Image (tube, rainbow, N blue to C red; front, top):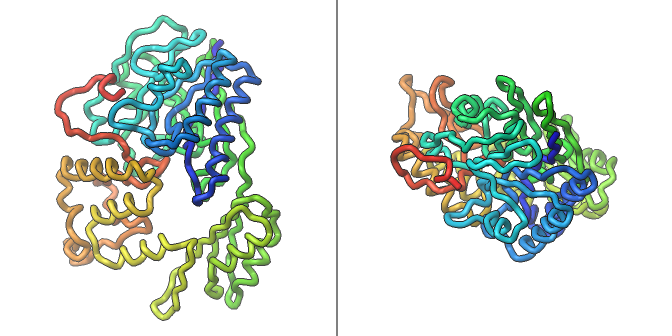
Amino acid sequence: MTRVIHTGDTHLGYQQYHLPTRREDFLSAFRRVVDDAVDEGVDAVVHAGDLFHDRRPELPDLVGTLSVLRELDDADIPFLAVVGNHETTRNGQWLDLFEQMGLATRLSEEPTVVGDTAFYGLDFVPRSRRDDLEYEFAPHDADHAALVSHGLFEPLVPDYGNVEWDAREVLDEANVSFDAMLLGDEHAPERAEIEGTWVTYCGSTERASASERDDRGYNIVEFGDGGASISRRGIPTREFVFVDVTLAEGEGVERVREQVGQHELTDAVVAVSIEGEGERVQPARIEAFADDRGALVARVTDARERTEEDDVEVSFADPDDAVRERVREMGLSSAARDLDETIRASKVADSNVADTVEGRVRELLDESEAGAFESADDAATDDGTVEEPTDDGTTEEPADEDVAEDSTVEETAPDGGDADGSDGQASMGDFS
């Protein structure tokens, strides 16, 4: 039997909320996973991509990562990994450096055998290049096999509607039979059995946004006589306090303070969401209240619609909301709104934005989505109506038409890879 830890989306170097403390939290979470691996004596740690948050990690992030990987090496536990979209570079990958140092193995179409299981890797591939993939892998003589990859795969993440990377297609076309697909990119743990193969996301090891409310952790995967079995293990992380307040008519800032004050806030990230018919609340007043009670940081989201007569006050907690609302009023094309979201408001790492935008434009041009470049004023439907933008800035599409990939989904799925527009079929090695 082979027993491994399946982890990923560690996003080392992410200075969330511009706080060095949060940057340290992401490394600490990764270290906890490795400590568990050493304590449990697993056969390997399998990382499914986005080890780093940025393709240009800074020296402290590299030093911290090396320190953790050396702990695994000292315990003779191999670190097997693929490259995610956040860390993809045009030439060599940081993972290649760690491999040359003897601290990691970059998985590929060639099998890496641990115990009785062969592990293969498929790095993140931009959507524009996936049609060129041939899922051909070198043969193995192990009892079991697993494919490790990074991306948003149907049917585990069907709600995005624009994934277009189907796990069933990969399993059907692959010339190797896999007991499991071990995936990264989706920050929530998910699993599904597809024609006898377990397909699973391990989830992220720290919360990369306030929308990630579930506890963080990783998967333990065992390969044995019955194939693959998967269990879940949680890890302690920075406390997030989620406070959802619905204000009745006449209620306002005092009601929000009352709700927030019911929680222990010391050293916690506090995420407050406000809805209801009550009075307008200045986020800065709630943030200051939480700060006085020892919170590490507080962020307030007021999701209620504003009327034109309202006096709008913007705090440092919600400038993106204000800008997004103004952009939606400008009548820009869907392509322009898509690119605005990628450049300004998405979770794409700063150093990845240029390549992400280039890849997105190439996709729109390659797919001949001329309509995407029409302004909202010109994009009238046959009956003379105009499609209204949705909350994320895109327009509603008919259910039976293809939907353009949303490069703002983090975990989602910012398209950080290269898109060279090359023709012809490609082998797995072309994307390593």
